[in-house]
Amino acid sequence: MVTEMEMVTIKSGEQLQIIRVVGPDAEWKEPIMKVLGHKGEFWLGTIQMTLEQPLEGVQCYYYLGLLDGEIVSNITTTEAPEVGVGILGHVFTNPSHRRKGICTALMETVTSDFTGRGGRAMTLGTGYDSPAYHIYHRFGFAGIGTSGRLIWQARPGFLDDYFAADSTDVADISWPDWTRLDLLYTIATGSFLRGIYFTHYGLSEYEAYFPRLSQLTTATESAQSKVLIKPGGEVVGHALLVPDPRWHNDVWLLDLFVHPDFYPAAGELLAAIELPPSRKVQAYADSQSPEKIQLLEAAGFHQEAVLRNQIVNTEGEHLDVHIFAATK
Image (cartoon, rainbow, N blue to C red):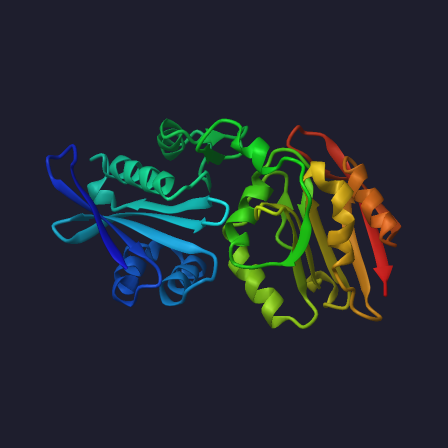
């Protein structure tokens, strides 16, 4: 579905037509993929997927800037309407049309449209202190340290309310977790070692990983990925069980990341993961995550090794990595 958004006079005096394409859309698939062709094979596969098939509970919007009918710029948002959380990405302007204010014009349209739909928070990542970083900052995106990760909130304190204490349940992953996991893994607090399989260390992102996660858990027998979720749809914990390719897939890997305020409820998340019979399962925790260590021990995992000074956190501190194991 295509919506004419607005016509904007840019710095060059040209008229920029801004339209919004909502995936899936067969007509605009090839033009969008062409303008984003620099993204590479992985991202093009993801873009193609969003333009070819509906994703239940998630909506992808492509905001296009056109000059004389030619696409010269794009901004994409991936959104989970249930919780009003989105990811802003694929920001691109044709090099021959840069410095005309096109990106700024699109950003104004995107943020206004997102808010109008009830959007409450957006995440994104870019180079820290880069020109793009400062453009996003002007639109209310707040940087987190020097990570290059930024969060926009519709109102101050939204994240505090989003992660406020509440009852929880456990659910299998679904497409809305694309944005909800991205927000969870972006928080600055919590374990530094968040996930081995997708190399999540410290505050990170899930935008690039979720399509792979969905495919992985669908295609791999006994692989599981579950979330700890509040009644309003807010995801506050995540567990992933997959064969570990580092060990010939003979050992299984359990990754677990939980918002620090929800460890008292995380036992139900861990209990919902069914360990494969007669297979060794390993889990990892850094030395600054006592709650995670206690949780694993309570679930029947035993410590089998400690890797001293194995990783260095954001503050430059060397952390031990504790290896836990269990066999059903």
